Amino acid sequence: MMVCQHCGEQVEEGRRFCPYCGKSVSGQVVEAHQVPVGAETDVPANRPAPPRPEPMSRFELKSDDGGDKSRRVIYLIVALVAIAGTLLLLYFAMQPSTPAAEPRLEGGVREGSPEFAQAKERLVVEFDPNENATEATRAIGGTVMTLTPTIRNLTGRAVDSVELRATVVDPAGQPVKQRTVVRQINLDPNKVTKLPINLEGFKPGDVRANASVELTGVKFK
Image 1 (tube, rainbow, N blue to C red):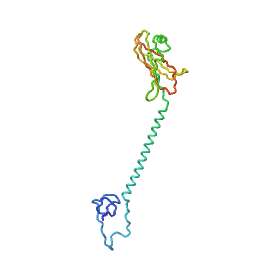
Image 2 (image 1 turned 45 degrees about the vertical axis):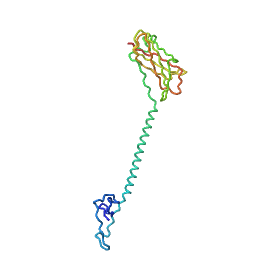
Image 3 (image 1 turned 90 degrees about the horizontal axis):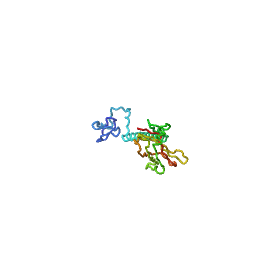
Image 4 (image 1 turned 90 degrees about the vertical axis):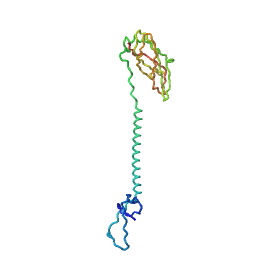
């Protein structure tokens, strides 16, 4: 038998590690002195026995159990953070968005001025909802209406840009969807052009009874 220098326990010869303290005994153990029967030893009779350390296997079991608890706590915290983030995203997604400001043609003549009234008579916007309006359903859902008016320039002046208002109404004449667009057309006198205008965001219950496109601003070259 051998004696472990770290804990004092007897260790069988040939072992590399002490089964009680788990430390290496290679090159660090001494042989246990055999005492003849009946011989007295130098060790006092009342010397307390050294504490017997727990086997290594129990220590490892305790360590593994503590590690599992720590991992479970970490997983729980990560899951709670993920749930909170998802709830916040859903909350902000459900908030009503602020409608974007309608574009405005800068530097042109607009409704209310005598020059605009004269220009509107000769810058003709032709639109027939039965012929110039189409609908399409997107793959991701939702209906898109495309209104395509024809603009004829009979003003005798070259037109740089126009501002148009497209409106879709219900059977009661109330607007269901409305959009103002500003387009640069570079339209010379006595020329014609077409301007497609897309209207999006229709709800499933929206009833579209009629549509119109009107001129609200013009800018000459």
